[in-house]
Length: 463
Image (tube, rainbow, N blue to C red; front, side, top):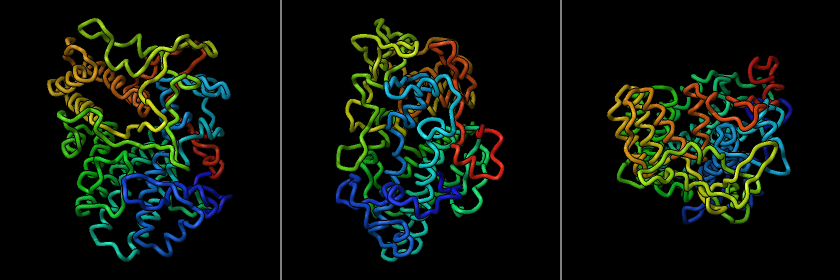
């Protein structure tokens, strides 16, 4: 049950689950090592903060943001199913088809419709605890405090973004500092949630600019390119650019992109990632499924691909490969598995250079700067897809089709981008249905616990 709304569970009953998300032992390298959590708790961080505990909790924010991203019923997988990037043929759970493709999504099902909600809020609330501890701790310089505040608010913004991406026009709670035994936090509108995300990112930016030359803690391997306040600021601005594009604030998106790590001369893979390992107690990337036991790729990835000048398919189709034999479950057939994640410790992108170039194209397209938009589209077509330059009509409508094609293939199975983009542009009805009984679902409902905690449940999202 949500920490923002629970009436039946006291806050300290989050116990080891909250601790696991937030408290780690510091190490001398950029890895997140998982310690014995029995001797650490959030109450101790609040009442007796030290620089070491601040460092542990800050590292834990990355663990909290990573939970439910790379699971087989996590963010990438479930949004991939809704966006017709992937299937899950898990023989132990038919709901990957009956609920995710036929529906309706069930808010009482914490593994499916009620998923991807509670844990981001735990991380946000834990971030607020950390911010309070930063204000009270002795032994940190003012610059180290500022660097920590900027880091925490940026990760909180990422958590809120994941929530609103799944709930969309239902909105979501913002105020997570409610007494868990008291009245639930009100449901803010989608626009208000996005406003709050931008506020966090802008506040985080100001903190990072005052944060000196280093963080008082290490970051995970996935943030190897963003280990100082100055470099982490470019990650902060990259997230803001994505959010401003989502909001249709294209001029603001371009301004954020100018301050981000966008660089056509850098590898397209350059960016920030969730990292995984096989260390005891750590998480592995469950999207790695080379035999296709559960996770398979949608056949339209091949059938919809454009051709290169030599007649071969778009080079990005190498992100999938055929199985020896097709598989059919509940009337759905595919013979493709993903090759994107080549081991159980492969990192999962949060945001990377290739997306930023496409976001710049999208922002320029929204401002009707067609030549600038086409330049970036062609750059990605040629460099990532091996395709010839675009030769179709240079109109806003035609270039939008081309942009969305390239976002689909460049960001395939990385974070639900196709589903989110199809919804933003009113194109969910264009997504394919393998069987006539299938439906294209536009959003997740609120978890049942969120609805039951309220005297008057929201009329939408609590069916």
